[in-house]
Each structure stands twice: as C-alpha cells, then as structure tokens.
Image (cartoon, rainbow, N blue to C red; front, side, top):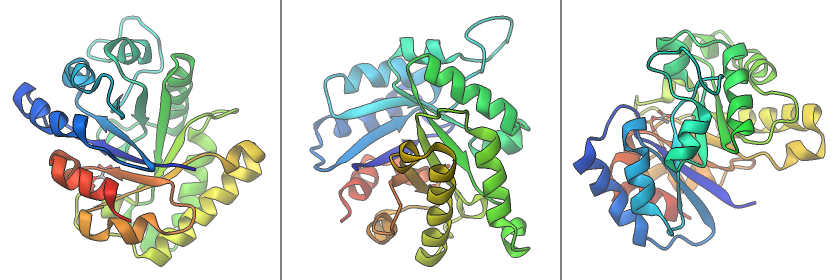
Length: 241
Ligand code: PEP
C-alpha cells in the first residue's frame, strides 16, 4: 500500500504564504508516496488551482455533517469538493477540544465526506493524562468505535494529543503498539476491507524522525502539522526512506 503524507496548515496561510508553500510542491517528484495538503478553507480553491495536474492532492481540515442549511460559519463536504478538495480531516484533537466535537458528530462528518465523494481522514488519539493512567488503548478503541461509520472508506490518523505541536514524538515502540491495536480493531470491525485502511501517525513528525516513524509496521503515512508549513521540510518528510 502506498503511504500518504498529509500536511495540515491549521489556521495559517494568507494568499501569499499559501502560494509560497504550494508552488514548490507542484514540481516535486515523489516516488512511491501520495501527498496531500490541507490549507485553511479560504485557500483551498487557490491551492487546488496551483496544484492542478500535479501529484499533490488538496483537502479540507473539517466539514459539517449536513450538506447545506442554516449553519453560520460552517462548510459542508460538497462545498469542499466543489472548491477542489479530495480529502477532509475530521475529528482532529484541536476540533475535539476547542469545539467539543463528539464521536457521534465526527462519525456524521465522515459519512458526509464519503457521501460527497471525499476521503475522510478520521483522527483519534489519547491525551497525556490518559496515557499516564494507562488508558490509551481504551480511549482510542472507543474513539474508533464511535467515530467510524459502518462501511468506512477512508483513512485513520493516530495522533497522540500530547505529541501534537509539542516537539515530543511517541517512541517507535509506542507507535508500533498503537498502530497494531488500531489495525486489529479495523480488521475486527470491517473484515478484509479493514486491512486496506491506511493508519497515519501524527505528532511532531519532522524530517529528522520521519524515516524511523514511517518504517514502523502498520504506519500508512504521516499527518504533519508544523513541518508542513515549509515546503522543503514537508518534501523532506515525503522523501524520507
Ligand atoms: C497535527 O496538528 O495534526 C500535527 C500532527 O501537528 P504537528 O506535526 O505540529 O505536531
């Protein structure tokens, strides 16, 4: 299975910055891995235009579970698709925390994404306290059960909350254990289809640690935050072997 290297710019990127990050990606030849960038919603159409015809896909960072309606400030999956997106991240820990998103809502968003023809990337991951208390497998298991719809056709991202934006990365052993656990849960629930679901690792992935993390069994790629804001770092991660 080809690994997916996905970058989320979070709430960064005015027009000039978006162009500066996206333009070098257009020409980059990356063999053997798929690339995706998820700019803020205001830049999706412009970045999709820059990357049109390249090997780099464009995604959203969130979507609403409804297709349209009275939801001021929200963006639907068909709108993302219309702007040029092929993927959308749902259930990122910053959305779970800042917007109190529940597994039920995230499952609705994943279903809306699939219905709109987008590939959802559903994020799961424990907090530092949950890991200290030895509850990481229970927490992630519950998030998977609640956030993934039946017949799920998408990507899962394991992102330990304590590793996001902190410079602290999970050890390769921790990543191996959690990815094996997630793989087992996916196969138990979805059968043979579960074997084909990519499981990304996210949390302070950098050029220096990417090769080791991407070599861990059942790691299907990376979800990259901070390091995706510099094209050269993002490309170095994508090229890491
Ligand atoms: C993220 O926000 O999903 C993330 C992994 O961020 P960072 O790479 O900066 O830790």
